[in-house]
Image (tube, rainbow over all chains, first blue to last red; front, side, top):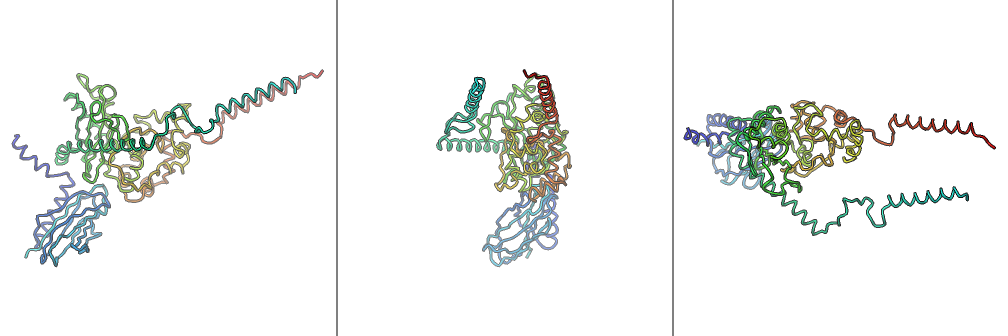
Length: 140
Length: 396
């Protein structure tokens, strides 16, 4: 029994609360949809919690010649989540605004570099709202 | 000058000198110098030392609360994963509580959680029961003694946890029964824990407030959301003596208590809607980010609104949880959000709320009808007496 508890403990810790589980579920559904359209998930995802009006930024290295898609999901209390992707020179490459709770941005970098992703929790009816963003790359 | 008149002049002069001595301050002295203000003005050095000490205390408290949050994290994560609703409890300090007593505290917290109709919440609450005197002294961020309840609100490093630090004496109050050989469930303990949840209960029930609401609450030290009493009828709180002391029918010295409040709060007690609005909206223009630490230290002193500690609890009960929830999370300016939630002008709603809590006091120079009647009767009696005396006067 103690062995079982030891084995279960990390899994329980990784499960998160009901809202986190909801975000993971939405993300896995998005992954399936994108997989069917020829994308594979890059083992790099971003998650967190934001109050309405707050934002978070992440950096990622994107390679030239590939086509990438970033999709965001959020918990049921979130009404609108915005994504914006910035090139290494600081210019906005693509953005999904007013896209409700499942924004998608796409980019085909001309040069390899560190891109910055900005996630904005535009509307959240019960703060904070959980969100998750996954990165996908088109299969060659 | 007749001899009798001379005596009258001397008496009047002596009386005037007496009044002057009592009321006029000596030259160069402050007008309101009292026995409590006999100290020398602090030097700039001393002021700086005091400022540093306050900052040091605040940092100590914050560090301590952050350490407690880390200690509670595994238990909180476990509860989140398994959808366990009530708060996690941590006992610290010179803990002398037996296991049955600890279980009793956990059971009482379950009761409070149910009573407040809280289930699995987005923001988890961790309750730290500090038994006996604090290990780190002084505890209060504003130099308060160690018995102050202190809260670590969700911040950018952990947006989903609120920590309530509740000092519990085992000599008096709710903790006394816990050190008995067979501790029993009692209302005092439940009430202590319910009050102790403080702003954390609002965070658990309604989430983190919108930005403008959070800044407003921060500027007011969360006075409107200090106690989660939305399960109780108005005037049924543990601090009713404060409200009773403002009731002219029950306390002839009510004006002493009333005038401890700012002018707008006194005017609101007098039933002036514009003043009620000002009292409620005080701090709503604040631009400073809200603090992460809130303390109940001396919360009753200088309340911006009489009975402010139950304002939001009464609002939740009156307008319903859904409307209050929308207000609490609103991104609109405070007055817009609150008016929308109350569906009435803030001043009007607050005036009626205040009148339900404390019967309106009389403001201004007007006398009470009974006093006026008594004065008129006395004047009539005096006139009658003079008239009768004059009529019977004999001139020789």
